[in-house]
Amino acid sequence: GVGTGEEETFAKNTIVVYAPHPYIFISKCKATDDGFTIVSEGNELEIGDGKEESPNSVPKWEDSKLKRLPLVWTNPVTGRNHLQAHGCCVLRLETYDGPVTKENMESGKLKLVNSLSLEESRSKLHSLFGRSIAPGRI
Image 1 (cartoon, rainbow, N blue to C red):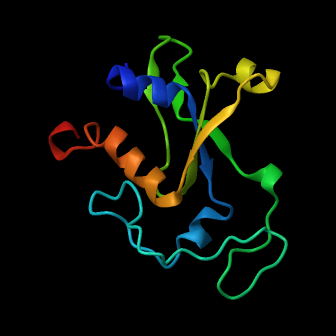
Image 2: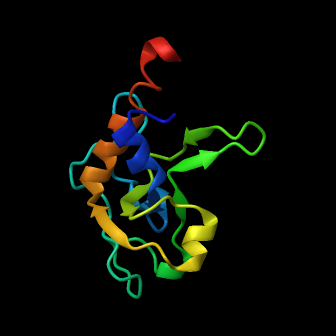
């Protein structure tokens, strides 16, 4: 599994939306002590609507080109589920009313039930991955 029952359901029903131009977005930020994600201090560059750019924003971008990937990856050989996310580049976590599978996403049947803010997303990922990246486990 990928955590407690509640955590596993959350993880299986969630996609990670990554920031446009993620490394530019976080270029003025510092990482958490463990390096997994970014300290939320409001130092990220502005994202805006992607149509304009300024010295304080990321370059132009298109919503259709944002990376949206499931939080849970299923190993095709073993069939086991694993959490997979790049904590530093996350923009938000979107949770749906059922498991985020390719089939479910393509069918259009899933409905968005919650979207966490940047700070909430970082905190949630840190909570989910914390046990895995603890010094004694690496």
